[in-house]
Amino acid sequence: MDIQRDLSKLGLMLGDPEKYAEDMGYFKGKPEAVVIARDVEDIRKTLEIAREKAIKVTPWGKGTSVTGAAITNGGILIDLSNMNKILEFSDEDWTIHVEAGVVLDDINKFLKPRGFFFPPDPASSFMCSVGGATSEGSGGMHCVKYGTMKDWVLAVKVVLPNGEVVKIGEPLQKNRVGYDLVHLMVGSEGTLGIITEVWLKVIPIPDYKVLRVLAFFNKEDDISRTIINLRKNRIQPEIAEYMDSKVLEVLKKSFNIETEGVGALLIDIPEFSLEKLKESLHNSVLVKIAENEDEKEELYKARSFAYLAIKGTSKYSMSEDIVVPVSKLPKVFKKIRELEEKYQISSPILGHIGDGNLHPVITYDDDSKDRAMEFFKELCEYVIDEGGSVTGEHGVGIQKRELAIEQIKKHNGDEVLRLMKKIKDAFDDKGIMNPTKQVV
Image (cartoon, rainbow, N blue to C red; front, side, top):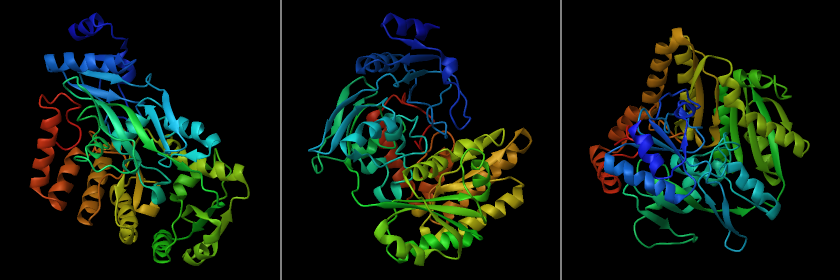
């Protein structure tokens, strides 16, 4: 192909497009060419030729997106996974500087013996890249207390669509110079440029004892009421995760979890909050406290692998990413179960219930695909009407573009969409960066 020939002439390393044809959400596409980036110069050269020839460009971290954010039909895909160095760490400034291809868990493996940690922890943190997590604005289990990627990114190095390399932001705890362009890049899904390096805040590992509690319930309403009670009692959990009975049943095959009722809350709290937690548990039928670090880690791993385990129970699955105010959780649980009945589709529920972020996994096969899509759409539209969001951490990608536009129009208005379009044009006037993703 001509573009592959042109890229080869530039001395770029090329990959096999077939290996980049599907993400974890089953979204499919095939790039015309794949560049395996070894450094910033490889990316700069690629974007220069792409701009000159008006060829679309899509960045790829580890392919863990479940929304099609890194999938492209045609064009050039740039794989950043080989750019995986930890460049600098400061135990005085509490910052770490890494390349975009570093696996998120590897940051914490590096930090732990030094007494620090990086809180955002997507379920895919054992395989996702920091560049991808930054581009997606990812979250995770610890985000109920510590926030998502946007709360931890201080600065980024970006190759812009015109080939210019810029550093945006400063590795400082405070910086009020200029517009906050850093947070335009966080969650931009590769539509404004390609993130190549990231400066992150880190914090010391807490020196107080954290308990891991697994509580089971007979009614989902009791589970959501417990989360509301935590808020009312001013308890700040380190994590607050939900797994329904369908999720737990699948996990029993791999993890030694005693189950009861319709589902469970997995909650981390400081030891000094235990009595308040017990007061907040609404009609729980079984409460277990992890007895040692190995048991704590086993429960954490079970929740981390829950989506992959559910994926294996059906031919296809869609992981929802809805967010609602915590006060609306009882209504949303009820709606999901009504939709299961209406469409005759099974939807195991897991998610970061502590901050109102649920991941109903809509499972289906070839015969039930249309019903699954209707389920998905109706649930998202319900969440929008309830003042929630169609995505809290997975991003928009291909999956939710039209629904994201609908949400912005209803909650924010057409003028906000026009402002977003102007921002896109200011960064990418040729429209080559990951088109059809995000909302403009």
